[in-house]
Amino acid sequence: MNVAGSLSLSERFALTLEGLWRAVAARIAGGGLAAAVIVLICGRIRRVEDRVQLLLVRFRAGRVLVRGARVRRSGGGRRAVGTRLPTGFGWLLPLVPTHAAGFASQLRGVLEDPEMQALLAAVPQARRVLAPVCRMLALEPGLLGVSPPVVVERVAAVKRVRVRPEPFRIPLPRGVLSAARREGFGKIR
Image (cartoon, rainbow, N blue to C red; front, side):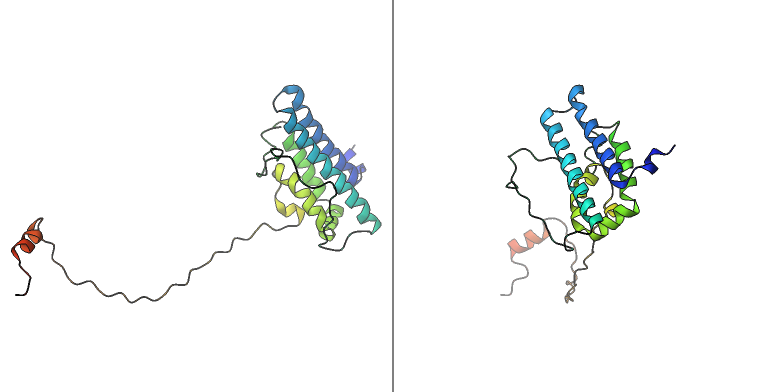
């Protein structure tokens, strides 16, 4: 029986992120990571889950914000020094190697769902909220409906510069020129 087919999008999303959260939290018992880092990772995953669930409810009810509008967060917005998580592409995969790749695959399936694609197209906040989790699990930005940045090559304008040919010179043996200058050769008297 296909259990994933009988679950709604929000349930599959919640189960995926909750499973990832539990896999990271299980690292405390294993002693592989510092407890403070695990708390930060789990907190980020929980916040993403809560925000996306709220956006899904609003989207289904037809109460989405205007395209491009930003919601202001309460709570100051400043973090204590030293509480930043890595931002590199796929940084969580080596920390939770046995589980993170499986949850990344499940999250990819949730993001490819037509309802989730409609949410991502209609609500830009959803893309901003999901981006950190996609980055930590090495999911490409194209899943969020965001095309990767295009690298534009710039061609420098080349000035036309007149180059005068250098005069023809005959290489002289070492010391000949200095001896000739000492003797005064080449000077007009």
